[in-house]
Image 1 (cartoon, rainbow, N blue to C red):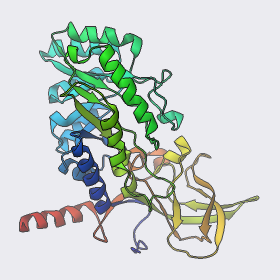
Image 2: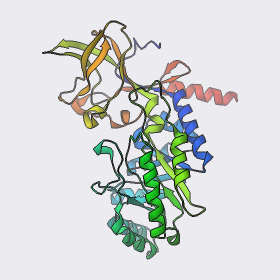
Image 3: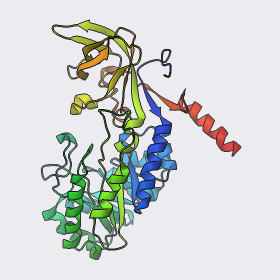
Image 4: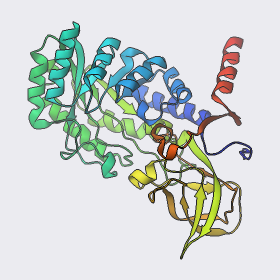
Length: 397
């Protein structure tokens, strides 16, 4: 066990060896079918984490203008950048056009007309894909389901023909294909099978190839094992990609793209936090940590479950509510969690925090942002220490 005793808490800790193994496996299985992966950088934009993904040859999926700029600054190739999002501002669209990224994934007829006008005024042609709402349900939390009629994302099918007509009638729009994404943290493959069947129908019914469509972006959303992350540290990318290979029946030559975020980085990160106090309540005991919803928002936002362990104690089991110090009653990591008897000063680790932890950090209560540390070959390193080692190794090659 690595000794965290003298490190200021809380902090994010990334296992870079696990990250590299996960990315390598995903790339190998995608390549088996000729698929293309983009990294959904909203999951974690830490430069070192993103850099390892960039160096693997994966592109990037952005949902804001700042993510587009950051991705290019991090060295992701412009032609590997896609820009989605239901509410792109004029300024963000201009950034995408100026940077000449692969495409903008458009989500309404009105957005298409705005992009067309901005492209015309800039003397440019905007490459666009149409994000379609397929009305396919995903068994996930309703806050991260995106493919049903009641969701704000994508073009509903009754309006798809109008969007295609706008593209075909414009000199400043270059239609390249369709984009779908039905949700996040999906742990069953059946929704993806249903999505493929729906896509087959849509592609044929609307003659997408006839409009020049040659790229199909199937989104992402593959879940990770939050309940037993140590037993299942890497998702089953082989089975995931196999579903699409088996079920999609498209014309020859169509490129199939994916946007993977959580599945690439979720298990490589954890939060290490120190117990500030324990407290006896009425009918329950509390463990109060120096990490809170400001460092990990998912339990407060989605009622998400993360595995938590005490790495300082091996005493008899006790039942606790594990809570943070933030001045909100929703600042709870777990209720009725079983830990070894826990005391002030003990260190806890919250697993599966590589995705949507650091990237969702809050400044609420004016709390300091935690440090990010990196574990490689059993050593705990700061970013600059890891980069120095990598530079030395490169120089010796």
